[in-house]
Length: 356
Length: 232
Image 1 (cartoon, rainbow over the protein chains, first blue to last red):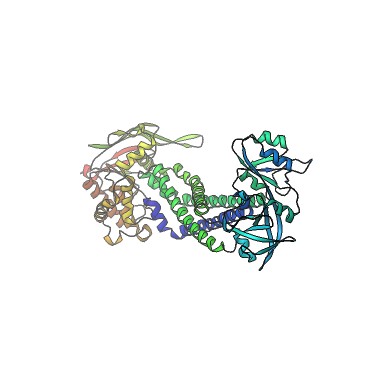
Image 2 (tube, rainbow over the protein chains, first blue to last red):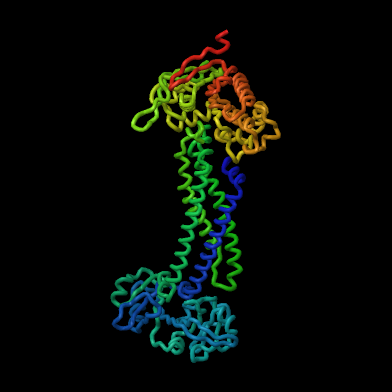
């Protein structure tokens, strides 16, 4: 990096400008990554963290089963048949619905899950709900001002809070857990929404065909949450565009820089620098600019995200920072490499004579 | 001892539908410690001669031997290594790298060779001293030096790799007569001190008095010119 570092020192204004651009784009990407993770968690954690392997979706009579929590319904016969299926450890009916909650301090929407205590998120205090009781996520307890022994209005019902669970949410609404019978009473639905299955080698295709259901792995079931996929894809598309913009901007910068450096490159080649030496030197220069800008952008994004997390759904962690920073650097290097490859075609003969 | 030898070298360039002959049956030998001046008008082939000797152009035919190696048989990579190890080039324009200080213009040569740059600083400083660049100007970049100072750094850079062959392209073209004469004097001195086989091409015959031998180039052909010493 003998020449590379000195070029940066000499043209510090230009390189600083490029570094600032990389920093800003990385900050934006880290924010988007954190927001994507946070919104995704906000939309799906109640399903994503169920202690099961698969989710079975059903459909009303005459309709084909789809991966959709809003249209799925499971009959008693389907639930019983799945429970008897070889290779299936358990098939717990799970009711999923949105309802209105009214507590001591607030009123609003919550997601209501009804099922066995086996599916309950970790209890932080109190006990698992029995009929007529609910266990609420910590965020529900904080927002609605309720705790174990307190009363919460759900729809037209009044229920007792038996405990507080780790925070879970579904469709951007914090989750309230209860038994299937209480869920049916509050939601007004007679049949559960899905089956939560623990599987160890069952033939899902044959079981689905026999029972008119559609079974997917728990992680794949998230697309069945209304709006989840559209929201996720929109944010991911913005990320992809930002990465592409970053690669193009750095590529354009180093294209111009390489063209400006051609006379110097010709001289260096004439005095014995190999193309490999010059390409390594230029790539090290690109890495210094990209690495510095991306690390700074990652730090700003992580710090800003941590502050913003109290107001917006934001997931900040080593992966949500390290991944976008690494991708920024790698794509930026790829864009730069295409520009820097021009170095190999510079003819050292141009260093001789007056055509310089 | 002959360090640079060209034997029956022919070099042509494409020129529309035909080929232009830049060098025609050119042969010459340059010994260690000898300063050879090649004079000729613009377009006579002087720069082509340097390009071939510097291994920057591959001749159509003939042999170019540098430090005992026939360069026409070498790959591009080998020719690059040969330039790095055995050839110093003093460019017409000083062609110094804009981001490097005068001292660093020399150190980059050591870096290209994979040598210890830190240890080379003292030698680089001494060499800049020997070509007449003030110690205070070692930390200056090219745009902070005068034309004559840039040319002195150019010469020092070419010498820093201890080359066997020193190729000098119109070293005084950007200088006034007085400074041009100083640069040619300097080239004669470093040729003797460093024992390089030096080829200097120029169109300014007035600056050739310090050369050991003169050749005249016309239309790609070389002819011997009697030196003042020979004439006497």
